[in-house]
Image 1: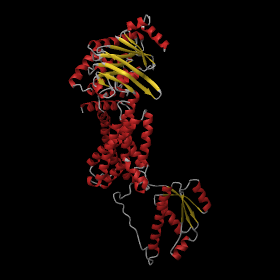
Image 2 (image 1 turned 30 degrees about the vertical axis):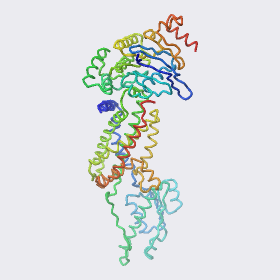
Image 3 (image 1 turned 45 degrees about the vertical axis):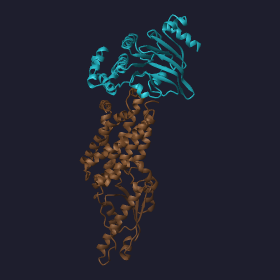
Image 4 (image 1 turned 180 degrees about the vertical axis):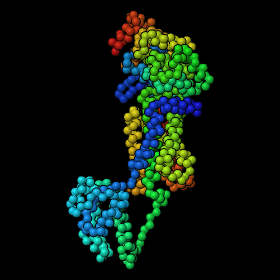
Length: 369
Length: 241
């Protein structure tokens, strides 16, 4: 164990001496948490709306005004020909078209029903889906409002749905993104650092001097992993502070549980980094291999696409995605206030994962080639 | 007699290429054994097999009486090794490098301290003790690397081209260090391609294309090849091959 401490001391000396390392460890979590949480979210705002108003009645104008006041849409222009509106959509000037037919008001007042058409540019299917969703909500709310004020004797729609969003009542996407992004950043940085650090020793040749010593494989690996293990805790602290200071994300669960979990999760990513380094001959190879896995891990971890909506084979494949467990854990504990009893299955899965990956790393590490 | 190093048809092949071709030799304890040969003759590969860094393809080798092919980790406790490529940490100071390797070899904290002091004094590196190794001239780095290889008092030390690229004066000083170690009973196996250095060895072997073509004392070798110096011996041998 004393040998390991000498190795840990050496790693820390090198890390703190590296002018690039410390800023990266501290600045990266801060910048990514802030930047990604603001920019990369599911919210769609400022959709550009083209209006074709064939009716030009007080009611049609009111409907258009409701769109403008919603905050989701900006009325780009109001035209009287579908052709012009279609051209604007084609040129990407508008995201969707609201077409109000002639006699819209008359039909509504006389027959109690009116029709409008909404056409969306669906190249970005997610955005189009959301845009149409928002638009239909606005139209529905508008018609209900009209029905109750204009015709008191008419019965309101029979079934009304009342929404309430639990655990994130204001539907604040930042609350949802920050815990996930923290998981993603920590995974990314420590996996890369471990892989590159070891391959660098191989490239420079210093590993050869270590390999002629009686140092044991587990000592070497522990000496390499422990510094980054501790660093993962520092990064977690920095990230959580930013989340709290900048975004006021709720922290309903026990923070000790978060740190304890980080201590179990970090070795998964460290072990993967180590495993990669065992098979890579150069830092470049290690980088590409690590990137290959991390890209899949990150895109499938549930941060950008809900895991539940992936095809079943993908969900099964995702069982080997450590980042998925971390993101899931962070959201459950921070936003939902989950306790250890609630997340123990996740906890033990990750613990087992770490054991397997590091076991493989020790097994495949060769002091003698 | 127990040999410090003994090999029997030690061979290493990489695919179709035979880097070391069935070499057999013995080195007596306390001997300075020169391992000569052109670049690519297989010296480094042979040394890496003897230090347990490389797995032999066939043949056997014993270092300090232990079978390296079977128990490489047991050998490592008893040997020192200085690689051809400088392999101490450039981003650590002289003192930190010594402390690290002292710690790895399990030296006591107080021993590490006292050894550091005597080492720095011997190498006249005291003013640079807390400087990063990256700033040291090559000759000093090599002396430091050799001293670190001796830190845990191994009985056998392998030096792979310790003086390549070093100026003549520093080379001379380096050989003083080698002699000093030999005086304390340490066995030294040194590879080099400087033929004048061969004269400093008790016995030398000359490797050509993976095979040991000649093995004797420098004096006998010169006599056998009717040469005035080792350089001539080497050229005559190389021409035969």
